[in-house]
Amino acid sequence: MKRRNVLKIAAAASTSAGAGLLVVGKDSGASGASGAATGQVAPAAAGVGEGSGELMPGMKGMAGLPGLPAAGAVTPPPAVLTPFVDAMPRLVDAVPVSTTADTDHYATSIENSYVQLAPGKPTAVTSYGGGFIGPLIRAQRGRKVSVTYTNNLSASVVVHLHGGHVPSPSDGFPTDELAAGASRTYTYPNLQRGATLWYHDHLHMMEAVNVYNGLHGVYILHDPAEDVLDLPGGRYDVPIFLRDAYLDVDNTLYYDPTLTWTALLANGKARPYFPVGQRQYRFRLINGSNHRTLTLSLSDGTPLVQIAGDGGLLPAPSVAPQLALSSAERGEVLVDFSGYPMGTQLYLEDSVLGQILRFDVTETCPPEPRKAALPATLAALPALKHPTNTRDITLSLSADTNYFYINGKVFDPNVVMASIPVGTTEIWQVTDISGWEHNFHIHLVQFRVLDINGAPPGPSMQGLKDTVPIPANGTVRLQATFSDYPGKYVFHCHLLEHASFTGMMARMDITA
Ligand code: C2O
Ligand code: CU
Ligand code: CU
Image 1 (cartoon, helix red, strand yellow):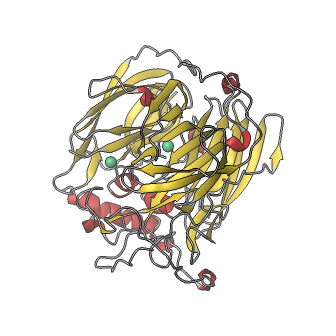
Image 2 (spheres, protein in one colour):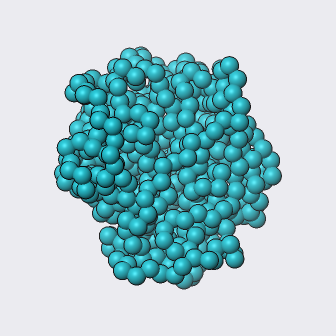
Image 3 (cartoon, helix red, strand yellow):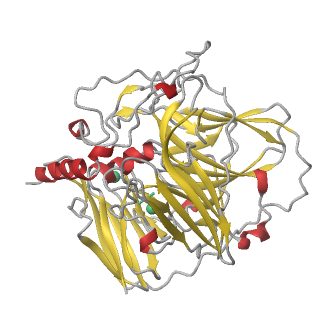
């Protein structure tokens, strides 16, 4: 019987979105690029081509769903990318179209365009504002932001602010569509701690394809409460949006989740370099990959000093040789280049992909005012409220369909799995029985991780979070307070293919 769910997904997808697939074709606009450069080297990681099957079982059987290659499609060979040709761009700040006493208002188009991800041919993408990473929205805590999105595509989209504490009509419920040709204004109250958030598409069953094609952007919520820490600011506070892709020989973003994606893009460039000065930087690292976990480190073994996670500052810095970020997680780190001689090249590396970004200590910068050592504590967490309900969430694998489910159910936007009275504090006990690692994300709230397989979380997971990896056959207990904003939301696995294609998502209603 469960097999029908598969067919339902395929059928519903073809009616709701199938006609307007956002995969953009290449046309003459993509030409005019030089051919292959000389001196190319292969990507650092092996395993290009046939996937390891690590994403999910049964993926092959999904061929032909909207956005996926047809059954039997021939995989184009991957691009051979020359590393460290391009500088990593800084994200472009969005400029408000108007401001009022309490709101900054922005306008962004959603459109198909071409961008230069790697040397050679430009790449067709679907994007916010025409670039690969959408305009960088800088919000101030306590000041509202509204964004009017105009959808210039031929298909619906949904915009979601990941990590935002946002009223339901602006949250981007998967069926709350912004239709082709229409405009819609989303309003963000910014009544939460300063944090690095990001926005991305959330269209029912299409978010994996749409995010892959470029519907992602960064949203920084600045918080005056951080000022006492005197952290690097201005041009020394750098968001770095990391995501992987399968770029084919023509630099096309080829979407096939059964392949291993080895092109790692930092702010939209494949293996770029980034000039830095001899001083301290704050890097806001965002893992915008569909499903890849990044395990980041510096090439000389200098520990990463993490100061913030998904929901803002950690209670205390987490100093560790590696920083793991699963899909959608953020980690802010301080890196001090003051001890490196001019000319030093230092790499940000991933444990699987190898070098992904090279810092070149080449910039002269004004001498940094002498600073006290980083404080042992950063920002106290809000006191944990008394929980009044415990909810069990089970992540499972159906033997019939080979699909992953939440509490045995495929996502149905009309079925409420969790109904939560506003003001409630709950403990969620999220258990994987599928034998696969997932990662779990709840809209609307920033939660606390209480324990992972019974043990307290490490320093990196001590802060407020909105996404947490769930170990295979493991249990994570988390606690959240649903303080306001009645309405419909979702929680889901943030391995986007699981959310999109197997329906590993559920509706949660906050009730007045
Ligand atoms: Cu990154 Cu439902 O979200
Ligand atoms: Cu989200
Ligand atoms: Cu999953």
